[in-house]
Length: 170
Image 1: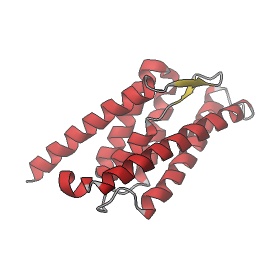
Image 2: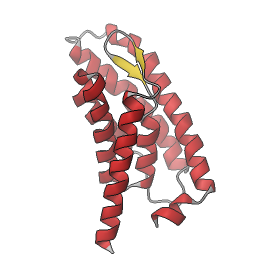
Image 3: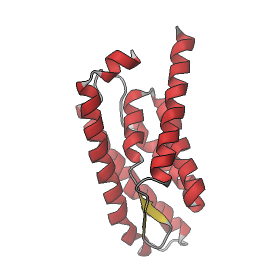
């Protein structure tokens, strides 16, 4: 039974990583600012994966999916992205029977905070510790986090209504 569950988690991890890569790199990929950053909605699927998978798999999903997207589109962001997307998964929980729970709704805000602060600090480092220039990237990161939150909540409610976790993952 343990091997089966591990295999299912690995398959779901790979599928989510692929979806996140495509959604981040190519679908609704909107360049923002002069630093090579862009707005996308791949984070919605990172949030979703973090609600469906145990934490180590969720971390791998975020790091692999978003990291590959950055290798394809903006390689300078690869390392910060792997760190940031790994961190945002940790505040979510896959232990409840539902996706949309109080904890996971709070985690959306924590994820937004980690995204904005993480990319701000990464850009400060990339720009040789210029603390002012990265401020212009904050609105784009907020739009990205907010849009991803909205998509995550809509998909999460739909999957909860269909009793997805009980029927498919248990």
